[in-house]
Image (tube, rainbow, N blue to C red; front, side, top):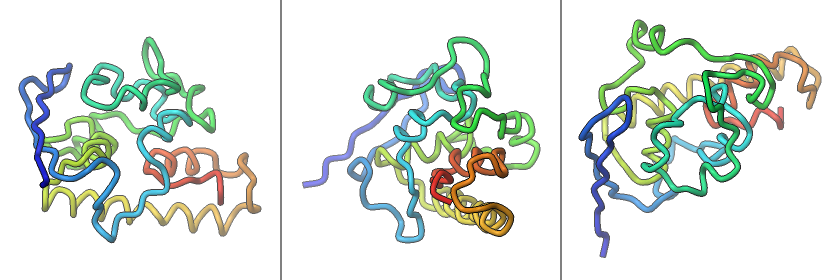
Length: 170
């Protein structure tokens, strides 16, 4: 018997937002969506300058944050796996129409909620298409870098990590 669970979010960006977990954590993904890293792995590696989602830990499993590289203050690119800033400001994401009201923090928030079992139909399809399109950076690294050279195109490698692609293996 599949019992759905309701999550209520109260953090700096959402108050009283509710969603349903209809799938088991980490399972039953769309066949077109095959991320190479889990949210916990991404946080451990160092993504988004350690500042992403620091005020919403209660929403996700505590284990995700146990060894996460998080900044107690503002974004710190040195906490990123490749030690570089590979993010655009949230204002730019909004300007480009990448932000959905359900996930005001963007793609990674969507992925975390998808990973724990939330499904949103059309929004899931939109985000999976965006994730898939990001693969173009893998081809650019493969074309322009020696295999395994972490110093070649570190911003693209960091950006790929932030989209759940394991760019350490390119």
